[in-house]
Image 1 (cartoon, one colour):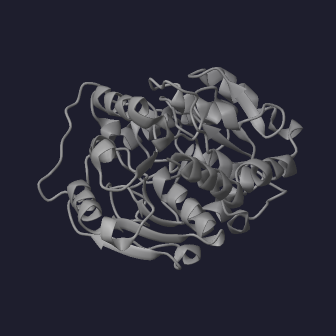
Image 2: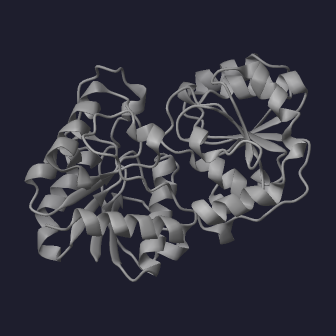
Length: 358
């Protein structure tokens, strides 16, 4: 197939502003290239494709980053800047994609415009939905596409898909990771880890409180999106509890993350998947997670981590004491079986072929 993959308009690829979508795009594109498909990526100006995706063609657009729906109220209106990336992305898709011979456009952005365009676009648009329910407007437009032709939609997990009004069982594709990029670490240090954008919906304060309870430092990796929130979390625990490591590329992140005794995953909302959960497991790091959203499907209690009731900090702290019962090699094996790039590419290919049938 000849596919155009449209990235998130939140910022350039490689900047970290796109969150998990950036990692998903890398795994998806690399996996499809390996299966012989032709791929073009449309992304923000300044984007850089990972080394194993350079066989893909890169189209870029200038413009202002789109506002993330994650940080807006449930009844927020749809907003698009006049010089915004979102409008420029889709103006270019409509103007150039039909003549370029693409079989389909694969949209990875969680934005209203591409979903609204889907029934009337001059070529097939399919969507890998990257988040659960956030705003009423997004819920409505996803439901409209599902009612028109649900084959155009795929989701990461059942928990995520359950947020939406779907007339048929959802297509679930999980996600895919390059295991060669993650080194297995058999001997951890007395250190807990947390990875994600530093913003209230990610629940860093709970992980910090659990780390303080057990007397272990917590290394924090990720883009500091909300400075005031980060400062408030640090003030809530004893000095030295938090080690701020910043946003790191995968190669550096996994080298540091692998040394952790466990990863704490504490989302305050319904995570669609949980990329950092799988990244930790790929290094052999067990995951202690709230039983909420996608991570609740990825963590297999007693095998690659433990699940506790959502928002129960005391239970999270208690689970730290159970980590040594887990086999770190089993964490790595689970990723190889369920979340490799090859597995993701096979699932995406099967979905696309089914959706493109008359």
